[in-house]
Amino acid sequence: MAQKQNSSRAILVITIVIAVVLIVVIWPLSMIGKGSVATGDSDAVYARILPVAKIELAKAPAAAADGQARDGAAIYNSICMACHASGVAGAPKAGDAAAWAPRIATGTDALVASVTNGKGAMPPKGGGSDLTDDEIKAAVAYLVGLAK
Image (tube, rainbow, N blue to C red; front, side, top):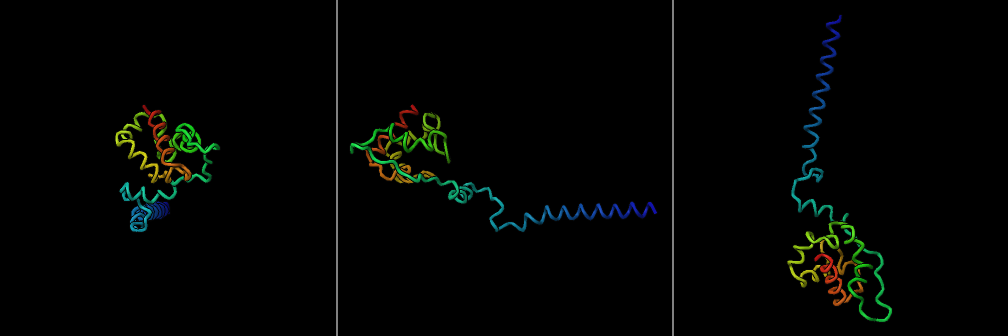
């Protein structure tokens, strides 16, 4: 009787082990082509998460009351700081010379173009739709100055 009970228990254990192995092996294979398994292609992964990581500022700050262009510090404090102070969504932190060095090497015109057109999660004009070209240049110069 004891031998029959041990063989029944062994059969049960073997059946459970086989079921677990089949689930572990077959289930991931059934997910191929359904987008659930990461392929390792970082560009494809980035493209899939981009809409989730996009940041848009809901309210653009008003222009200076006297009609004069705002300076770089004022623009940074009212618009850019939202992301560049903490590094949200991959934004290089203000004052981080190592993070800014490759960007500064591209030149001021390239940095201004990135701000104007948007780059990565940063919307065009950094979310400040009322910024003029001169104000964008001033903000870029201010951020570059912080990184030097």
